[in-house]
Image (cartoon, rainbow, N blue to C red; front, side, top):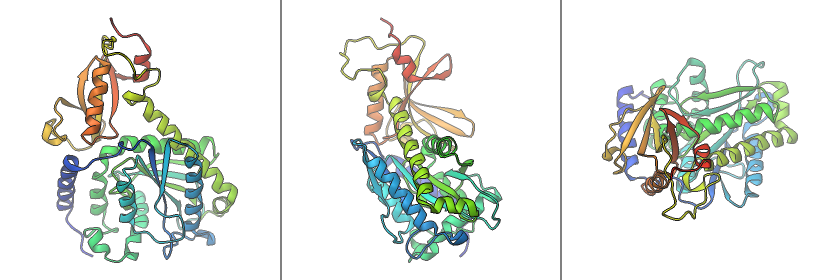
Amino acid sequence: MQTTPNHIIVSLVFLFISYLTSTTSLSGQNDKFVVVLDAGHGGGDAGNIGNGYREKHIALKVALEVGKALESKSDIEVIYTRKEDVFVELYKRADIANKADADLFVSIHCNSVANPKPYGTETWVLGERNTDKNFEVAKRENEVIFLEDNYQENYSGFDPSSPESTIAIGIEQEVYVEQSIILARRIEDNFKAKAKRKSRGLKQESLLVIRNTYMPSVLVELGFLTNSEEGRFLNSKKGQSIMANAIKDAIIEYKKELEQNVGNKIVGVSNDSPEDSPSTYEDVTFKVQIAASSKDLAPEPYNFKGLSEISKEKVGRLFKYYYGSTSDYEKIRKMQEESQNKGYGSSFIVAFKNGEQISVSEVVKTSPNK
């Protein structure tokens, strides 16, 4: 395959994002919190077979156990990309999540390297950091597309062996990078503290399975099958149950944290407050964060689905984009609802005091100014 020049790929992807931003309704419209669980590989694609263990079987068993635990929660809906040993094309996995208007996409895998010594968990989110080591992980996970019919048509000339291609696909989901990182950290923290596994940390790379998912998404590497001890653990029912429980708890913790930062579900605040109730907090500025991206966009309505009052702030390599600016908590709640109706289903309220971001839940526990 020929590699498309980097600047052309990035330009095309950016144009696609601009179109998507103005036309696509995102997650947040379902009454339930929708989680899509993706068991990696399947069918004729066994994944890695380190020490004779099959990644596809382990990933499926863990995904099903995570799902069973989540399904016991009345406010959570679970959707699976596969529930048996079948092959599902990568682009179809993303389509399943998008059509479900999901709140989270979690893809479960097992790691492998030629050296039998490395072990430990990793959780990946999309990013542009193509170090040689990270690129090899992306290349290995992405090469499964060669098993698919019409892969050239479905992936628009994407080449797993091309660093330029992997850089480009990372751009599409940057709007959700912060939420993805929060979930990834929760998962890795649980692997370390609850499952008592070695955590190799949060990683960023351009992984094709989550390139077109328009919601926070992570790819979980449960451990290395090529490490004999870790492979035995992951192939055991006990090991799979421990890992599934850690992932399940992380998803529930993430959901609770998200709800605490969403205006109409904020801890300690009644949704039935009368209209004339005081809701202004002196010296506090509320905003609705609607996006975060490495792209420096003009804060104009045409870039944000017609929303005005857009401001931006650069934090590290990212630009954070906000809608509205007010000390009136009730007003910002209405603006958050407006942003969600425009398609920013994952938008959330943030608070600032003296130029520093502070906890919204702590602010609203105090009395508003009369």
